[in-house]
Image (cartoon, rainbow, N blue to C red; front, side, top):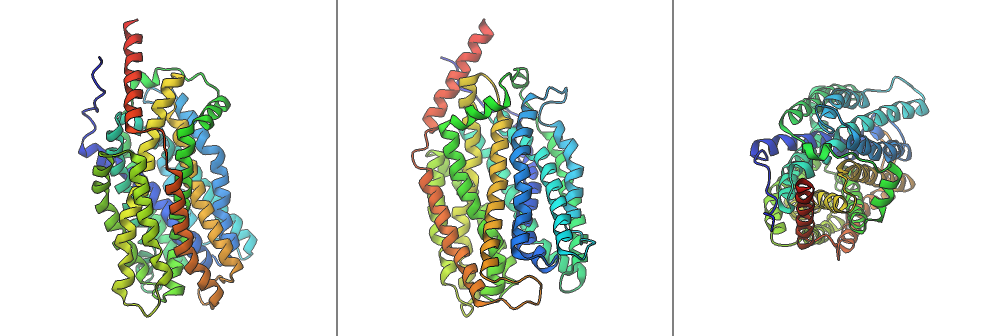
Length: 462
C-alpha cells in the first residue's frame, strides 16, 4: 500500500504568511469597493444616484464573467520557464495598483453620464488586472498544499490576510479625513488611494519569490477544450453545490458590507462607530480562525461551514432591533458574535475547491486548478456586485438621495435596517441549507488521493 501524501517541507510559517499577503491586497480592493466606494464615495463625492452607483460594479463583474474563467484556462495552459501561475504576479502587480488609485480620482466631467462612464472604465480595468493576479494565485493553493487539512491550514493564512485587507479597506475613510485635516474630500480620497495603490502592488513581488509550482502538473498537456472543460465543470455535483453555497454566502457578506456604513450613519446616527464596529468584528474573525481550523480537523469542512453560517445568521438578526438610544457597548457587542460565525463561512469554501480539483484530476487526468478557481473567483466578484447593485437599487427605490447634505427619508432608513439584518441573515441561513449533504467528505477525499497516488505510481512504473 502506498504511503499517504505528505505536505511539502517548504510550506512553512514564513511562506504561508507571505502567501496570505496576496489576498490582503485583493480583499483590500474588494472590501473597499463594496463597503466604501459604491455605497459611500460614489453617492457622496461622485454624486451619482444609487442605481447608477450600483450599476458600475455590476458592469465590471459582467466583464469578469468572461475574463476570470478565461484567465484560469490561460494559466492552466501556460508553459513558461518560470511556471504557469507565478509569472502573472509580475505582470499584473503594477497595473493593479495604478488602476485602483485612478478609480478614486475625481472625474473631470460635470455631466452625470460622463462621470458614470469615467468611473465604470477604471472599475473594469481594475477588475481585469485583479483577475490576472487572483486566479493564478488561488490556483496555486492545491499545488502547494496537497492534503485535506493542509489546504485548510494554508487558507487560514490566506483568510487572515483577507481580513487584514478589510481592516485596510475601512481605514480609507479615516485616512482620507486625516489627509484633509477634517472631513474627507474627493481630493484627499484620491491621495489616499494613490498610497494604497503602492501598498497593494508590492506584496505580489514577495508572493512570487516565496511560492512554487509542481513541475509534474505543468508537464501534463491540457488537451480538453475550454468549452468541454466548462461542461465537465458544470456537471460536477460537488463543485456546483460548492459554488451555490459560496455564491449565496458571498452575496450576504457584500450586502452587509455595503449597507453597514449606511446603517450606522442613517439608522443609528453614529457614523464614526462604523470603523469601531468593523475593527472589533475583524479582530474576532482573525481570533476565530485557529478555532475553526481545529474544528475542521475533527469533522468535514462542509459541516464546519454550516455551523459557522447558522451562528452568523442568528447573531446578525440583532441589527434589526438596535435603536439610536442603545448604549454603544450593546450595539458593538454584536460584532464578536457575528465575527466568530463569519470566520467559518469565509474560510471553508476556499479550502474545499482544491478537493474538487483532485476529483477532476482522477476523472480527466488533467490539473485544471486555474479553470476551477477562475469560476470561483468570478463567483466571488459576481456575488459582491449582485449584493451591492441589489442593495443600492432597493435603496434608490426607497428614496435614498445622493450628495453629502441630502435629507434621508424614513423609508430609506427602514430599508437599510431590513437589508442589514433580516436580508443578510436569510441569505446566510440559506447557504447553510445548501451545504447539507456535500459529497466530498474527508473520507471521500482520502480515497481520491489514494487513487491518484496509485495511478501516478503505475505510470512511473510503466
